[in-house]
Image (cartoon, rainbow, N blue to C red; front, side, top):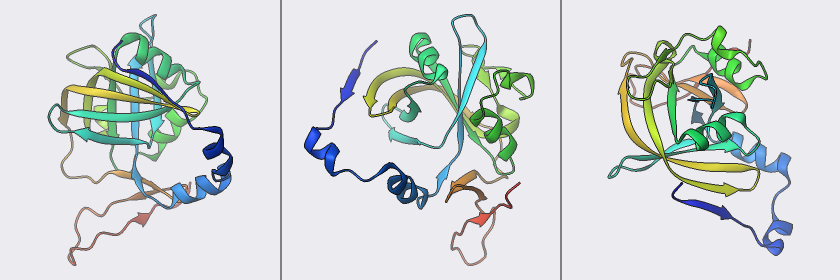
Length: 192
């Protein structure tokens, strides 16, 4: 596959880095959208994992990135297959996010999904605002995670009325659909 790299940190820089707990607290202060990254295993079984480390990279060509744990079965499968879908969860889909963040093996027995039109990959359109189906354009190993760059080859918007599911300070939140003051604030969802 094109674009396989390894991002290394020098021993001097590594020694000066924040402790993991401090870094986790720092990053939790930054709200992010919640996605579920899906693909198919070598046996054709659907696989998916919750991911809050997702962002756009380029408009031309349309590229995005997801960061997945290096030990993730989903990561291995999507790199081998060379294809994946990013499902951008809509508000009130905390259960879907929690399901795909859990250690439950048969996540797709409970999740509502259908095969995508292009590659037959698991599409969670009932739970998503939108999706992007991607071909793997590059892979960068970075610490305990791997950055996967995807070229968006298909996609669509499923729900323009709802807001996105957000994650902030280790809790789910919602983006208000309408705001009279034109200021945006996160409304924290009750922990369930």
